[in-house]
Length: 315
Image 1 (cartoon, one colour):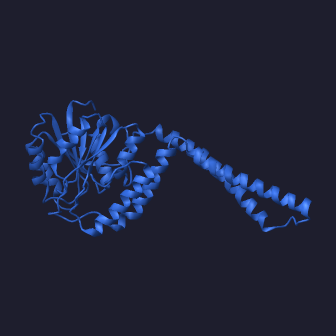
Image 2 (image 1 turned 120 degrees about the vertical axis):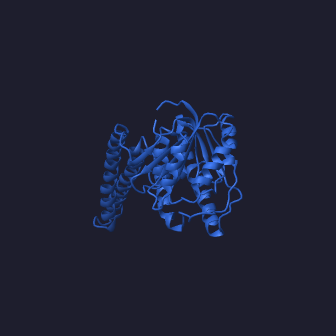
């Protein structure tokens, strides 16, 4: 899709029927200075009538795109669907629950125009309960340490991106929160600005400690992809060589002990040597298989991870 618009606002929706219309009105007010914009609502398999509300808005306003996914694919996939159908040179993401404030969008874009490729919102004064703030604070520290990106708030959905950066990224799992890390890996300049955060007035939170394991796994995946996505044989090969070298050194130790100090050939070390050697070979083979998989992955990127049920105001 060619970028004819300046701004696309991408909003994933899941069971937020009570907040959607008010959010739309606030967006229209906040974006009044932008003549060239679109709003994309992606209904991620809501069980209430969220899509009916979005559909009515889209029918009355051609600047609104309404996408309904066939089932609940998760926030990351919903955002990815929005990216795929966004026509703006600048893409802003935000939540549909009115905790993000549309009035902060111009602030993000102003910062972006200073020469940055990604501007991330920082909910410095969060209106969530302590049971959510404390785990989030710890998670942000860990993510910052692992990825090397110095942001205070990776979990804030309110972010602005240049489309040429974000449209080249394929998202899976819970990886929407790691988008700044992927963008920096692609060469993006990243900034952070303070944004407002409001208490939830409608619906129920979709986040909790139960999602922690999946976030940790995706963080490990993110680190691996950033460091070794084009060279998996480097990490597996290195581990394999270390294990093989360990097996060789232990074999040398047993040989010297036998001929110089009269030691026995039979030793528990024989089993350790065997395990190290076989495991080392397996790691090297895993690296080679990884290289083949990566090449297959990069050559078959046309498959979409989601299915669309309805699309209102599609170009």
